[in-house]
Image (cartoon, rainbow, N blue to C red; front, top):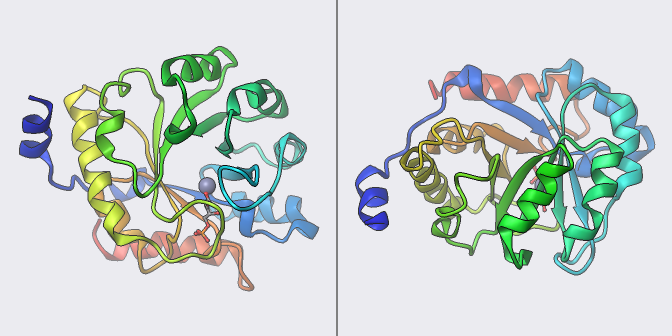
Length: 240
Ligand code: DX5
Ligand code: ZN
């Protein structure tokens, strides 16, 4: 039954251009000027700030923790979208909530009990997101659609900024958009994360993602505000 409804309805339902949120990932920012760069992203029209936490075990990289979330929280009024790429995230949830996280996304691949972890995040007053890696099927999220606040589709293998998008992940976005509608969650935020730039952003929005995480295409050696503006123009010009 589930397969039938998803198969029958799977066609990309592009998101209205104006509804798209650009969420700059500070992983690619200049940490010697982090506050300044976050404020430039806010001034440039960013909707969220994406903070990539990596533990060196779930992914082969170590980045930042609650201290950086707290510093960014002092630098901007934008919602902080904390992406936990770590095993056993449950014991760190209170620390990230206390540091100022507004959204906390954990990976499906590390959850022993998604209901328990999602409820822990919600009890801390944060939006609860579930991320899936490129190899993880969309179907794993069908049953938990009613309880999660957002979905994150990894469009690269997690661990590093500056990678090329795995185009094969985009049909998953369309399937998830159809599954969310099937579960009466038409407005479910579907976040896409990794390899998004002026060239790939239109196809990501076309597939049905409404929150685009962008790291290296925003924080590079040119103007942050101009980069965000060009991303928006790329979405507009493609009549997404
Ligand atoms: C990768 C992170 C992404 C990454 C995005 O593991 O989750 O948020 O920083 O950076 P770009 O846009 O450069 O791929
Ligand atoms: Zn991320």
